[in-house]
Image (tube, rainbow over all chains, first blue to last red; front, side):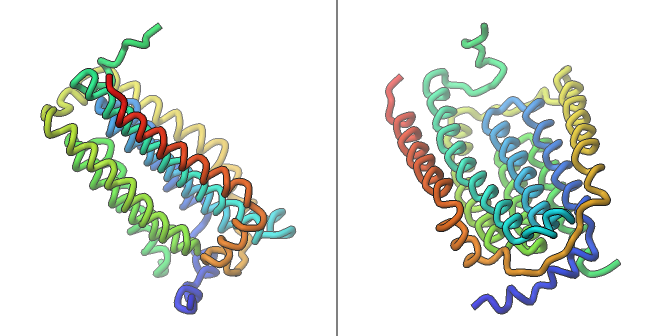
Length: 126
Length: 168
């Protein structure tokens, strides 16, 4: 059933693209997400930037899973790859739950105050 | 330059443009659509790494389910609250944001990318990304995390229903 997918030349990808390329993409996405969390005012957009950061972390987990280090490759690279993918599935589930509850909170704040601006939400200021 | 490298560069450029769009577009709906573009190209990158199952679930879960939720909430909020973010570039917070982003880049480059330049890169070609492999590992080795994820999702459902029904 998965014969077509098996023909993707994974070994060629390993030979031609270094790990640092994937990690650099992940780094750029994480930095963009943190920048957005710091500069945006709309809480929904802030949530989207958090999603961007979570996806950057997922990408780095998956690139480390696909490129095991020499020490891991000597032991069991398959178990290492499965550990990385399991962590990414956990992150996806947590992100889904977080978005459901977080957007519920934003809706509740909107119904209570009729506006959503993170600069005006200061009632819990110490 | 080989075909794989060309494909990776195209995907990375599209993903980064999507991320820049999320941060810098003024309308939240456009930000959400830029995030969809980013998620789909990231799914392609997962396919390129050999993670087939996670590429599929990236597109289904993130680009499908989560972004629909985002667009739904944006459209509910915007229908009653139309004004937008206008003073994005004018205040001090942009400088602090750039500072924080540069600090993050420097830290991750120094502690993650720099040490991995030489030690990583051993190759192995096994079917680590197929749904069969992930299903097997989730019902044997990682069965407790799997059950904890299901409880967490149940909590998410109960919590969001409670937040939606409560009267303030």
